[in-house]
Image 1 (spheres, rainbow, N blue to C red):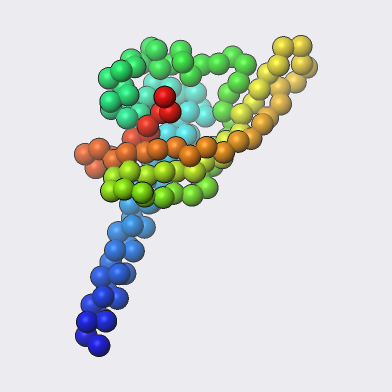
Image 2 (image 1 turned 90 degrees about the vertical axis):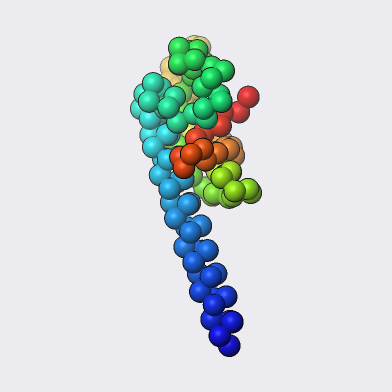
Length: 130
């Protein structure tokens, strides 16, 4: 009976640690997408995976994310999974406003995508799709 109590305690402790890790990641993802939606690509760049930033400088990053015909207007977290230690898969749903040549008004389309986030030195970073 004592052993069962310890196992329950350890299970609850592990569950609390997972919830805490998820909450920290959720906050980082929300901060990142808030910056992206606001068009603050300079600050959003700081959330990108360090190895990616070594390959792509800030100016190239900004120009690669500025599209006059389409822009993100909504980003919502649907689910978070941790397939490995310090690696997360964040299922997202996005709204994008698209402007077509000749159209009077832009239209919004929705799609889902799973993003990868990696923890480096205690901080979560977005890993851009290549």
